[in-house]
Image (cartoon, rainbow, N blue to C red):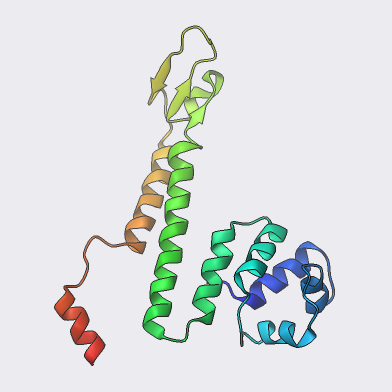
Length: 167
């Protein structure tokens, strides 16, 4: 997971700034000591600042919010749960992108998509798997495998989990 230091670095690179404070100052942060705490990973961005950082970097707000939850959590087991939630949510978002955005192409480019809509508005035809390339399925199956890894079908029984907690 990314940390406050990673996001500060990304802001500095994106806006070509020469200091951490300048990067955070453009988002309304006025205290140098707070910026130093974030750089050292001693604290995490609050929710409002996380959203500002995400918007400035043009990335998903949920990514930054989840990363901050992971960073500020001191309990190792809860931290792992936050990491798993973050991984799962990013896997689902990627799978949805592949399933609903990438496969659609115009009739002229049917050989590249899983589903192609015809250009003729009156026909309203839909061709499924028309000349689909192997790469579409490979990407989809790869993302599906990533989701399974993030959220496996086999979970330890509650008794085994309880044994691990009491150990």
